[in-house]
Image (cartoon, rainbow, N blue to C red; front, side, top):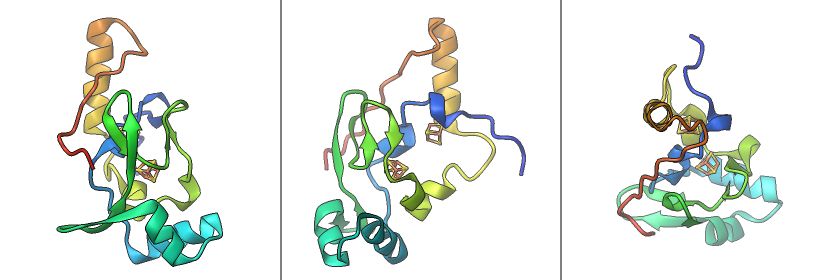
Length: 126
Ligand code: SF4
Ligand code: SF4
């Protein structure tokens, strides 16, 4: 695989702010196992049902993006269930570059500030 042209460790987590993070059956089972809780409990605590996409991640408030995945550490800007994260998260962005990173790198360069965070508020509030 070609070398990655993005650095998740220097990114505030744009992809985790996407309103729909799909959670398939195997993802839900893995996350329930990760926390040592029954699947029914995990369903109620961590996920919600979306009319179009089925089971998706619940979200929480975030200062930069409005809302973000409930498993995102909003202070450290990182995933708190990295080993157990859903397949959709593992596979993103699925190529050697990330559009969010390209956008961020452009803005940081323009602002001459390597820590600059461009906000992108998704319309959805769920
Ligand atoms: S938006 Fe791109 S660079 Fe940022 S955390 Fe997600 S995959 Fe990594
Ligand atoms: S599970 Fe982790 S990687 Fe996936 S959206 Fe949530 S915080 Fe991001």
